Length: 82
Image (cartoon, rainbow, N blue to C red; front, side, top):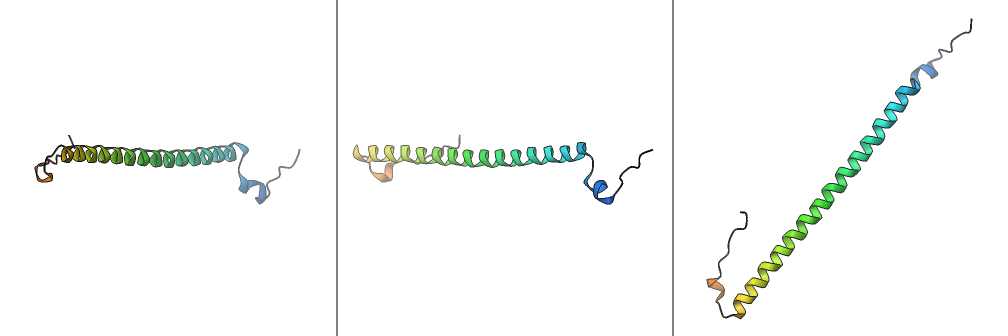
């Protein structure tokens, strides 16, 4: 009968199936982390652009009101959280 190679070197590495599974989990984990970072950065950019656009629209409205002769004290500042 053949002798099985049971050297510590071969046993410590694990089976091919286990190493493949660990590698696949690592690849998926890295992909998920990269995708989540990309999503957060994209959403941050979109939200900042929306706030900037809203502020510019309000500023245009204020300028238009002042140009029409309305005094700045009469301007109504509302809350757009609705």
